[in-house]
Length: 161
Image (tube, rainbow, N blue to C red; front, side):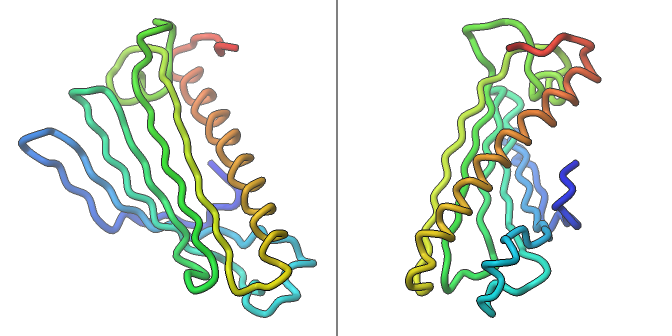
């Protein structure tokens, strides 16, 4: 549901029969969204980037963890993101993960951490890190909006402010 995602391929999927945890590894090809002015640098002048995402869905404990990192430019940059979705005990309203995976509407907590480190670009390190940080923050907000929209379609519940 993101216009910058070109394709997503599941490269590994398995279920741990003991714990019930469902593991998935996906590779996403995304449009290169680095501004044209920064693409004057030859290593940044590529049409797309690759991301690897791993997820662990635990239906028994009602949570899901996602870890992703960039596979492009690994010799120059490290971009990692970790997210956790879990059932909230504070507010029994609704949340997307509960509806999508557990069949009922329940408030969901969303925790996200990201790390960005760029080396070897000299004076551009700071500019690229700032751009990447802003892009990841906007991506998280966009992801929340998409999940809220999906939940509204499935539950018919109003959005929680």
